[in-house]
Image (tube, rainbow, N blue to C red; front, side, top):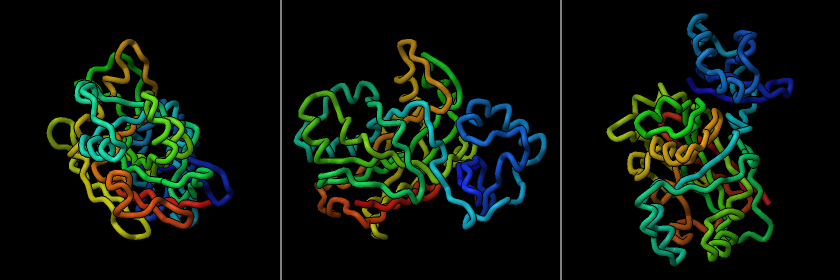
Length: 304
């Protein structure tokens, strides 16, 4: 299923799923289903059983897409870790910043906590931070946890996954360049906006793209003002989501349903990797589209 959060014609935020060219409202489908996505994820096994039992999956849409406004599919994640999972991006960005890739990167998946309150959805405007001169995008996929657990091995991690979405890790490179002179990693340069959407694709629907070693053959594309600036594939990832889940949950750290983990940027999926030679830094009016095969297009416009 492709699950969404949307604003209906009355301006109410509701949860549902895509059906053809429209949206099914969960609560209109069955009053036992919740109005918000986090509540659905918390008890998704029970709710999916109800949907299956009552044959709700193939219901006709309650609204056409033109009648609703799609929001971030999970507007209130419980936390948001972002990894650096693609070696090509790591090599490219490190070269631009004048860094070397530390040996530890090849020993463990590295992550930082990003701002899980600064969540944006499809077609939301993204405000450029004040005085920022090198605003950038990052083309990523993200996984949403579906089950509570700790010390989860990579071998069992798939049982804890709820679904996947497109993730744009908006970045203020001028801020980031300065703060990364201190070896603490990026923080303020990535504090202002995390866009996800347009939907969450449940893990069962992604199995058709699975190849060996917990990778998926998924085309990943970034466009700015209609021009392609990156065409990559998730299968080039170095650290997989199961490995990331194992790393996040080790040492008795409890992961909860509704937490998000970002894959890191696919190789060439950000402007910094070419030192902004393929496109100038983002300015108000620029329209960014990130597309991942099997999930959809996440579109946002930069504003001043």
